[in-house]
Image 1 (cartoon, helix red, strand yellow):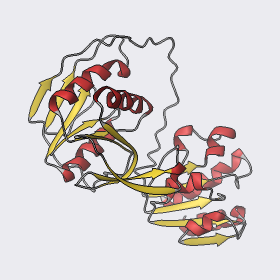
Image 2: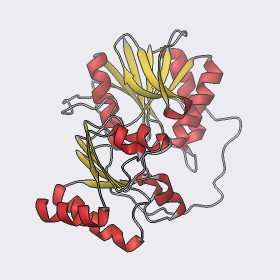
Image 3: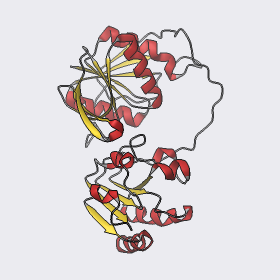
Image 4: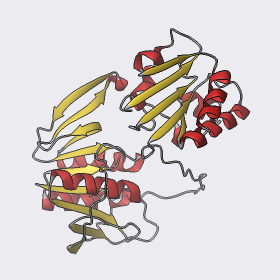
Length: 298
């Protein structure tokens, strides 16, 4: 079985190629330009075009897929590649399975449906399948040493309509690696003020963890970057330990953390839904519990 990988970031490209190699020895990667390092048997390289945006390469990628017909196309679910995958599916009449949580060797996929409230098992009816796979799903303990055995050029096909960049604004770079963290602390609206994040940072330092948050903290309060929002439309994590601090436990959030091996929750409300998702629960004032944990682990 041939697997073709499409990714926008180096981390995802490395992880998806390494994970795909567990399913099949024939792993191929599609690269635009030469900005990323590949760990795949075959490299399909599309030359970078001046002033072109990623979406402008859709026709080139679609033509390659139609020509080579790989049984499986694994795609990093960035906003731009989601758009490209949808367009390719429409152009070629192939199946796209999104929000994949598990992928088996017979190409049976488990994915979230109904806003993350249920898991559905699916298998594509088309001859070849495109799956959108997030960080951690195909994660391997170690990245295998794979050398590119063959490099093949892919001609650029000029799109009928090119996107035009009107303006560009630099976003603040987020260096937090939530999907790759072994310990993650999540904060919710139980945190009363922005300055109280310092207390959580001290605990994160003590337990060697990263900090994520619920959607209101990122989008309403704007205390943390949107890239740290944990949930169905945010980051989905699978750490060894997840510590929920002042989080009620709405389904939109728990979908993002329910693959954690151990969940520890701190909430003053005994009836908080988060406790139903927890392995260990501490009913108490987080402003007393967190300092006690800092003292213990520090």
